[in-house]
Image 1 (tube, rainbow, N blue to C red):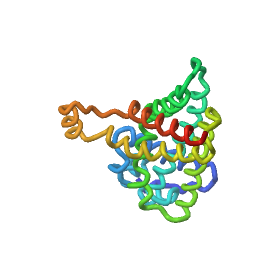
Image 2 (cartoon, rainbow, N blue to C red):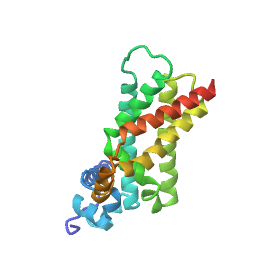
Image 3 (cartoon, rainbow, N blue to C red):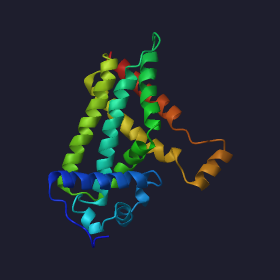
Image 4 (tube, helix red, strand yellow):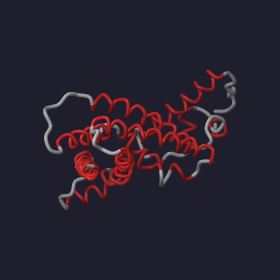
Amino acid sequence: MSAGFQRARRPEQVEARRAAILAAAKELLDRRPVADISLRELSCQVGLAKSNVLRYFDSREAIFLEVLDGVWTAWLDDLEKALDEPGPAEAGFAREERVAGTIARTLAERPLLCELISSTAPVLERNIPVDFARGFKRRVAANTERLGTLVRDRIPELPAEGARHFARGVLVLVSGSWPHANPTAAVAAAAAELGEPPVFAAGLGETLTNLLAGLVARGR
């Protein structure tokens, strides 16, 4: 793979090479969990030696965190449009239920985003240098703040700190519920026998509704 390797020197060449690596990572993520994908396999997918891949990213984990940042931003863009869709007149906590349900639905439609969020703390943050960690955490903070702002724009009674708490809660709930909703075949079979099929969107929507309604009620 590396015999014909030519190092990208111009900025546009570097960006093209990085984009190719990120595209290869996404292709692999369509087929298996991030924890099962090695740097060697990713290198083969993109057609480079491992050492050459590491010229463009600090580590395997950094590649997948870069993918996460991209799909997270894209989700927020789509969520903003989805939250602006007109609905019927809302009474009680129907508005909170609609906002929380929209968040849960649009997340469920993006398994790649949910997979990467759920893998961030236990897998992807374990092997990144401090400089990359600083940049990544700044992007996480910006994305989380944007989510809170989108919610607060639709529910002005929600205090600013309540909006931040809710946005952080979305991440925590996805991190915990996504793996349980996507178990191994054996665990899924056992759960089905007990009448406990895995549920993600409905359960997430219900929990987010309760969290949001509670934060609004406490802020009044």
